[in-house]
Amino acid sequence: MQRNESGEKQGDPVFSAPGFAELTLDDEDLQRAMLSSFLHHLPAMRKEMLAGVWRGPQAFREAVHRLKGSCQCVAATRVQPLLAAAESQALQMAPAQRHAAAARLEQELDALAALLQPLLEDLARRAAENR
Image 1 (spheres, rainbow, N blue to C red):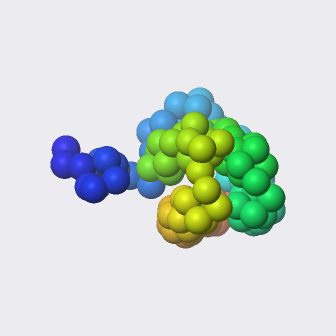
Image 2: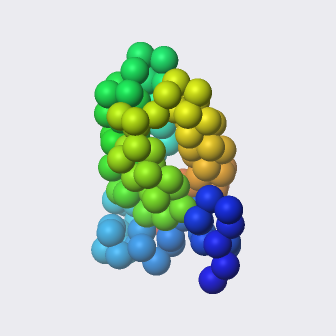
Image 3: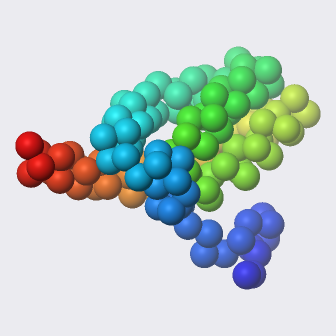
Protein backbone atom coordinates (compact mmCIF):
# COMPACT_ATOMS: atom_id res chain seq x y z
CA MET A 1 0.00 0.00 0.00
CA GLN A 2 1.28 3.47 -0.86
CA ARG A 3 1.98 6.11 1.77
CA ASN A 4 1.42 9.85 1.48
CA GLU A 5 3.88 12.56 2.55
CA SER A 6 2.74 12.22 6.20
CA GLY A 7 3.62 8.52 6.19
CA GLU A 8 -0.01 7.41 6.34
CA LYS A 9 -1.18 4.53 4.21
CA GLN A 10 -3.29 5.71 1.30
CA GLY A 11 -6.73 4.17 1.39
CA ASP A 12 -6.68 3.30 5.10
CA PRO A 13 -10.26 2.86 6.21
CA VAL A 14 -11.60 5.45 8.62
CA PHE A 15 -13.30 2.67 10.54
CA SER A 16 -12.80 -1.09 10.68
CA ALA A 17 -16.19 -2.79 10.62
CA PRO A 18 -14.62 -6.24 11.14
CA GLY A 19 -12.51 -4.87 13.99
CA PHE A 20 -15.55 -3.28 15.62
CA ALA A 21 -17.55 -6.49 15.23
CA GLU A 22 -14.71 -8.39 16.90
CA LEU A 23 -14.44 -5.86 19.74
CA THR A 24 -18.15 -6.15 20.41
CA LEU A 25 -18.49 -9.89 19.71
CA ASP A 26 -21.05 -8.97 17.02
CA ASP A 27 -23.46 -7.75 19.71
CA GLU A 28 -25.49 -5.04 17.98
CA ASP A 29 -26.88 -3.72 21.26
CA LEU A 30 -23.32 -3.21 22.50
CA GLN A 31 -22.31 -1.67 19.19
CA ARG A 32 -25.21 0.75 19.38
CA ALA A 33 -24.36 1.71 22.96
CA MET A 34 -20.67 2.20 22.18
CA LEU A 35 -21.29 4.29 19.06
CA SER A 36 -23.93 6.36 20.82
CA SER A 37 -21.62 7.07 23.74
CA PHE A 38 -18.68 7.86 21.47
CA LEU A 39 -20.67 10.25 19.28
CA HIS A 40 -22.26 11.88 22.33
CA HIS A 41 -18.88 12.56 23.99
CA LEU A 42 -16.91 13.36 20.84
CA PRO A 43 -17.76 17.10 20.74
CA ALA A 44 -16.53 17.60 24.32
CA MET A 45 -13.36 15.59 23.65
CA ARG A 46 -12.69 17.69 20.56
CA LYS A 47 -13.17 20.92 22.52
CA GLU A 48 -10.77 19.63 25.16
CA MET A 49 -8.17 18.87 22.50
CA LEU A 50 -8.55 22.32 20.93
CA ALA A 51 -8.30 23.99 24.34
CA GLY A 52 -5.15 21.96 24.97
CA VAL A 53 -3.52 23.55 21.94
CA TRP A 54 -3.34 26.81 23.89
CA ARG A 55 -3.26 25.54 27.47
CA GLY A 56 0.04 23.80 26.83
CA PRO A 57 1.76 20.61 25.74
CA GLN A 58 0.67 18.51 28.73
CA ALA A 59 -3.00 19.50 28.37
CA PHE A 60 -2.87 18.75 24.64
CA ARG A 61 -1.18 15.40 25.26
CA GLU A 62 -3.77 14.37 27.85
CA ALA A 63 -6.69 15.35 25.61
CA VAL A 64 -5.21 13.48 22.65
CA HIS A 65 -4.60 10.45 24.86
CA ARG A 66 -8.29 10.36 25.86
CA LEU A 67 -9.36 10.71 22.24
CA LYS A 68 -7.01 7.90 21.24
CA GLY A 69 -8.54 5.53 23.79
CA SER A 70 -12.06 6.40 22.74
CA CYS A 71 -11.22 5.93 19.07
CA GLN A 72 -9.69 2.52 19.81
CA CYS A 73 -13.00 1.48 21.41
CA VAL A 74 -14.86 2.07 18.15
CA ALA A 75 -12.16 0.68 15.82
CA ALA A 76 -11.39 4.08 14.29
CA THR A 77 -8.35 2.81 12.47
CA ARG A 78 -7.17 5.76 10.39
CA VAL A 79 -7.10 8.36 13.16
CA GLN A 80 -5.37 6.14 15.73
CA PRO A 81 -1.81 6.47 14.37
CA LEU A 82 -2.28 10.24 14.03
CA LEU A 83 -3.44 10.44 17.64
CA ALA A 84 -0.55 8.25 18.80
CA ALA A 85 1.95 10.46 16.96
CA ALA A 86 0.42 13.66 18.36
CA GLU A 87 0.46 12.20 21.86
CA SER A 88 4.09 11.09 21.66
CA GLN A 89 5.29 14.40 20.17
CA ALA A 90 3.04 16.79 22.13
CA LEU A 91 5.59 17.72 24.77
CA GLN A 92 8.03 18.89 22.08
CA MET A 93 5.46 20.77 19.97
CA ALA A 94 5.23 24.55 19.79
CA PRO A 95 1.71 26.02 19.86
CA ALA A 96 1.65 26.34 16.06
CA GLN A 97 2.58 22.67 15.70
CA ARG A 98 -0.12 21.63 18.16
CA HIS A 99 -2.58 23.76 16.20
CA ALA A 100 -1.61 22.06 12.92
CA ALA A 101 -1.87 18.61 14.51
CA ALA A 102 -5.27 19.46 15.98
CA ALA A 103 -6.51 20.71 12.59
CA ARG A 104 -5.47 17.44 10.94
CA LEU A 105 -7.11 15.45 13.73
CA GLU A 106 -10.29 17.51 13.38
CA GLN A 107 -10.49 16.53 9.69
CA GLU A 108 -10.16 12.86 10.56
CA LEU A 109 -12.68 13.11 13.40
CA ASP A 110 -15.16 14.80 11.04
CA ALA A 111 -14.78 11.92 8.59
CA LEU A 112 -15.16 9.41 11.41
CA ALA A 113 -18.32 11.01 12.81
CA ALA A 114 -19.81 11.24 9.31
CA LEU A 115 -19.28 7.52 8.87
CA LEU A 116 -20.39 6.41 12.36
CA GLN A 117 -23.62 8.43 12.61
CA PRO A 118 -25.39 6.56 9.76
CA LEU A 119 -24.08 3.28 11.16
CA LEU A 120 -25.60 4.11 14.54
CA GLU A 121 -28.89 5.08 12.88
CA ASP A 122 -28.93 1.77 10.99
CA LEU A 123 -28.29 -0.19 14.20
CA ALA A 124 -31.09 1.73 15.95
CA ARG A 125 -33.48 1.06 13.06
CA ARG A 126 -32.69 -2.67 13.10
CA ALA A 127 -33.16 -2.80 16.88
CA ALA A 128 -36.56 -1.12 16.55
CA GLU A 129 -37.60 -3.57 13.83
CA ASN A 130 -36.66 -6.52 16.04
CA ARG A 131 -38.81 -5.42 18.99
